[in-house]
Image (cartoon, rainbow, N blue to C red):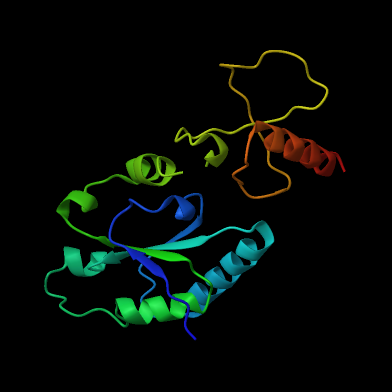
Length: 179
């Protein structure tokens, strides 16, 4: 049986789909590169108990910018939905690609669409924030510029019942990080 995928027409998504991995592209047909991307996302979904969302565009931007191309698609929305379900995708945002959307810069797309829809789920905050724990450091680094190098991913973002549950998890994360 094919898993039913929730389809949105804009970026106003249900709370349960926020903080998901987002794959962005036309995904018209599912060539080997797409398949590899979806297989990797499926691994992360299982490992970090996350959700997978896909953002596609209608019409395909190439068709929007070149009005002489009338049918450049290999697969329609229903076909895409079926093959996305094979890779455990939870939802699809099929965004209308129009003049207004085409004018959004990549920086604004990241900042105003991707980031503002994300992260701190325990506290229901929309602000993008990187929280860093510096072991054996006691000082005030607020409003200071830091360079952070990531060496290993410990766990995905999680919504906790309360602050005590979050503190407990942070203690566990510290043990893992120190190993």
